Image 1: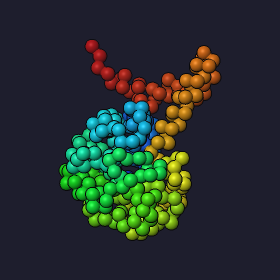
Image 2: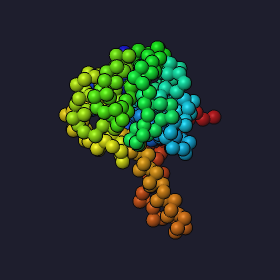
Image 3: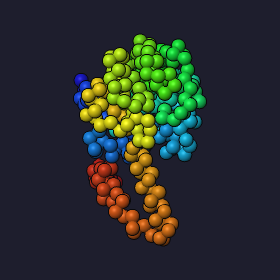
Image 4: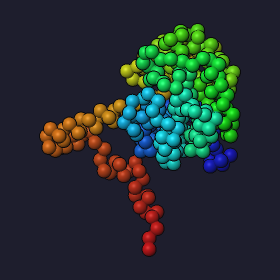
Length: 287
């Protein structure tokens, strides 16, 4: 099969076979995607919180729309062939349309969740869920919108916090039966919980290894032992970049110069190397 004929969904599924668990790293813009690729990651992720925080300066409370997210999806998929998994919140008004637009934008897959429309971060308290029946309808609508059979539709369940492990597993099995290709088990706290999810659903399970949340920062070795197929790091780089930027801004404001912060910065030469600047300049037509 020619490289260009391989769809993003196929590339994500191939990456899943190549690495156990597949490390999926969050990027908030095209340049971050380049950096992740240089480090050897085989799959990328665009977080809804990342879009809200980085692109629009608002908290992750369901404010960005499908149109907002698609802007960042297109920018990232235009610069890399690494497969991109996208946070599609609750699927917005039409999960079917959401899938079609994501396929068109070059995404490899999406995940949709079983929270109500006015959603909350998965690691906060007081999350409210829709019924299993309503979530099943969301998944079926998403599947109906798929015009690439390899495009991944992942179902996220936030049920553990409010309904318990058994309910979360039961929901995940219903979501699988409705057509979900993979399961995003949110805010689990023990490896044994992942083992039970994996054993019950028998399709790939993703672990969200986000900082400062309910889930411990399990290693890939620990997750592999529990049968987890995907390890997600949704905002790790964004948090580090934000902390570094804040240090630089404060230093400039306080000292009137950035000299003390040069050690923290990527050099111009390093930036150009990452962007392939010399090759692009040499290929530019003249005359």
